[in-house]
Image (cartoon, rainbow, N blue to C red; front, side, top):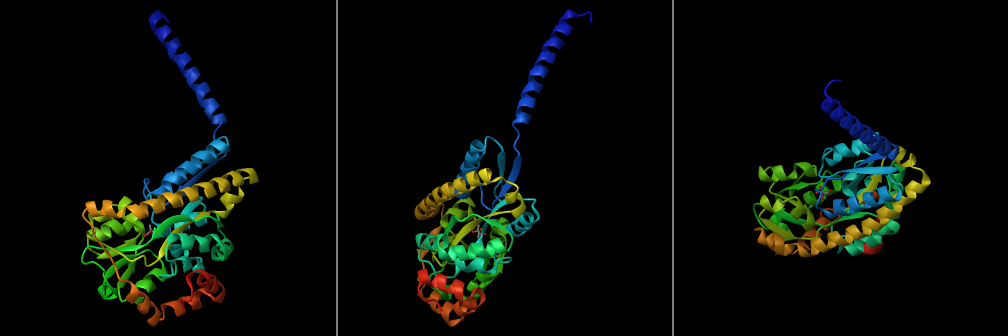
Amino acid sequence: MTDRRVSRSRFIAGTAATFASIAIVKRAARAADWTYKYASNVSVDHPLNVQMRQCWTAVKAETKGRLDVQMFPNNQLGGDTAVLQQLRSGAVQFFTLDGGILQSVVPVAAIQGVGFAFKDSAEAFRALDGALGDHVRGEITKAGFYVHPKMWENGMRQITSSTRPIKTAADLQGFKIRTPAGELWVDLFKSLGASPGPLNFNEVYTALQTKVFEGQENPYAIIDVARLYEVQKYLSVTNHMWSAFHFLGNPDAWKALPPDVQAVVERNLSKYALLQRRATQLRNDTLAEKLARRGMAINRADTSGFRMKLSSSGFYTRWKGKFGEQAWSLLEKSSGKLA
Ligand code: X2X
């Protein structure tokens, strides 16, 4: 080495590299024991992801970095039906999914969405935090999933449309409406005289934009974060059903966590699910004005005809038969007699 400046700079570079590698070794020593994926179908700014991120940050801190859960919001890993398969195979470890879509593998999970069974979210959560929820979670467990006892809020669902406001049941006649991929959803809107088609949420915006469907139905918070107001003109307040997400886990991934880590996860999921419910309900209760400013024409539908049609078409008796006496009587304890 004849040029001292070069050797000196090499020395400095070498020293820096040594420090850098020490930093890497240190970080490697603290690397997570488990790196898991959590997937959801809504965007980062929906409370489902806002509070879930806080939850995983807390879990990481409390487990001293042993469990690191990475977030895959907004259908990044695929539509709900595909991610449900990934959860089963273990490619995804944690997933939040609406009971109505989980129906394809756990039939009774759709019971949360029976039309007009719950008048609001508070009533629905009393049932799903209680005996009805225990029954559903029992079946989810039997189907081989981990399920946490606290559901995460989506909300009461409202109908949006690009063609006409829904004022009474008559306006639904032949109405081309997207529903989530669940049998009860499709049957509900068929019973109401509409022309429903199931579609995963990741395809909804485009399907509405290209007019494959005239309308869809979702709570205010989703209409807002998914910017559905850009492709829908009318928002008709129907509160026709309630919707919420189960927190599901791949059973092997769950069992791989030692009891102390499981306890940290469960405690934080409970805490942040309750915070998420409040945050979502606040949005659902206060977004009407913002959506109106964005150009939506909002009306309150008269849903008395909806209920009559559901009864006369045999919707309630059909689903009572599918869910079974036990589940149905637990539902009717909170809803009153439906069928
Ligand atoms: O797919 C929907 O419409 C959504 C986002 O509300 C559900 O997850 C059921």
